[in-house]
Image (cartoon, rainbow, N blue to C red):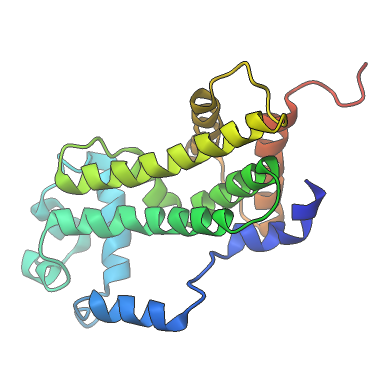
Length: 228
């Protein structure tokens, strides 16, 4: 796993972009966003909206609630988006898009399955730290709307990729075979997702230490490495 040491810093603080700049440009052209209302852009609107969704729940939040919290009229919100569902869609995709980029970068790695699993875990910690409000909201999605169901499908694809990676590790003798790979993957990301509730890293070094702890505990366990 030493082969990944040189990449760890970048893994946690940068997401891989498309190798073809034209592809990124065409994606923007294909899905243009409304221009922001002067003095209140989409990002600041989203930040407050996500806080309200987390506090009150998506179903329990009305456009009137958002209007009051934002201190703007509902028509001002509709200048940016067409509905509450669109706000949720944009918000959860902030997390899902970054996780998707991590997964695609991971696919291109040529190291063994355990090294790739380490990369996936560490990069996921980086996404959680960088996109914490959006990841928090994603973890509270329950599938009651089409937007939520699409988000859950994308999250399920990520979980399955992790389970497949664990299965590859089992197949080459690098991961213990007595636990179902799906259970292992769920336990791994259960630990990563739990960081939402308590972790408050403030510096790059603290994020690195956090990812070290998650991976070390996940792969090496609690047993003292020098204890017979």
